Length: 220
View 1: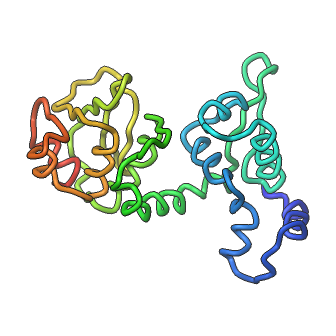
View 2: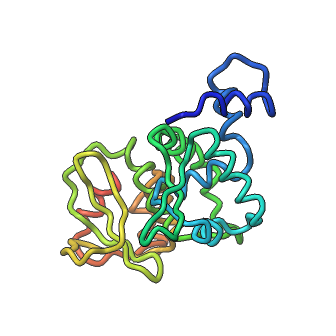
C-alpha cells in the first residue's frame, strides 16, 4: 500500500514545486538508478546481492539508499523467503504499474540504440523486457509460433500469448525456427529499425528453420 505520509516527506526533501503528475512522479522515481532498479524487479523479485550484480556500475551504498527511498515511497517492498533468513525486494502493485511507462521509454529509445552498444555493458536478460515492449506496438498477429533466439550463452524463446509477447529461457518446447544474431540486431529487428531482408542480406542474422515464422514474429 502506498505510504502517503512518507510521500509527503519525500516531497519536502526534493520537490519541483509543481502541481503536475510528471513532476510528482519524478520526485519519487526520477533519481539516477531508480527506474533501472524497477526494470530489474519487473523481471523478477531479487535479493540485494542480485541487484548489485545486475546493475553494473552502481555503488553499494547508493543501491541501499535507492532501495530505502523506493520502499519508503511504496514502490517496492521487502519480503522474507525460504527459511525466513533471506530478504528479497519486489514491486508493490503500485510499483508494478511502472511497466507501461518503462516500456514506453524502451520504444522511445530506438534512435539511441541503433548505433549499438559502443562498449556499454549488456546483459542478456534485458531482452526479456525490451523485445516484447518493442514488438507490442508493431505486431498485431498474436498467433505466430514460438521461435528460438540464439543470442548468447543461454538459448531463449520468443512466443506470443493472449496478452502479448514474452522472451524466456527455452523450456524445451519445439521451435519452428531459430534466429542467430548479436543481441543488438535482435533489438533492431524488434524495433523495426531495419528489415529482415536487410539483416539477411548484410549477414547480421542467420535463420534455421521456417523463415516465414520469423517474418510473422517480427512483422517483417
